[in-house]
Image (cartoon, rainbow, N blue to C red):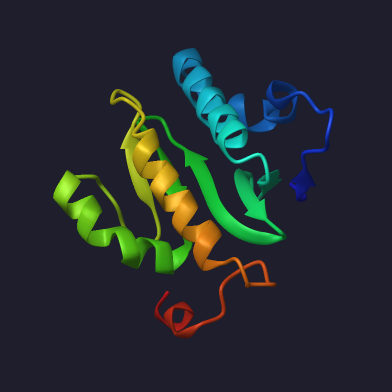
Length: 142
């Protein structure tokens, strides 16, 4: 699938059909849609695109966060620097994560405050970044 940017006037639910139809549980589809909608309302400067078959949020052309969806959970990826920055908090909260992904079980409440904190970190940290991905010493560790 090619990269598709959401344009002004596009209906979010229609734009996300290729993503939402891959989530088998209708309740989880609603949760995913509500989360993406809330992110866009909270951060109207963010742009939504579908790339690599997953929704991604960008700010001035730079990656802020990607999402993916599985049967038992949804994941977010804030890039390696975001993972390193929040690793101890994730450990403290007992949130499942890997080197590049944070996993949230569908059965749990969506921790929007944490997701918001991660988004705001990336917006601030990448304010002067003019490439899609970060290009710093952390990239070599991925």
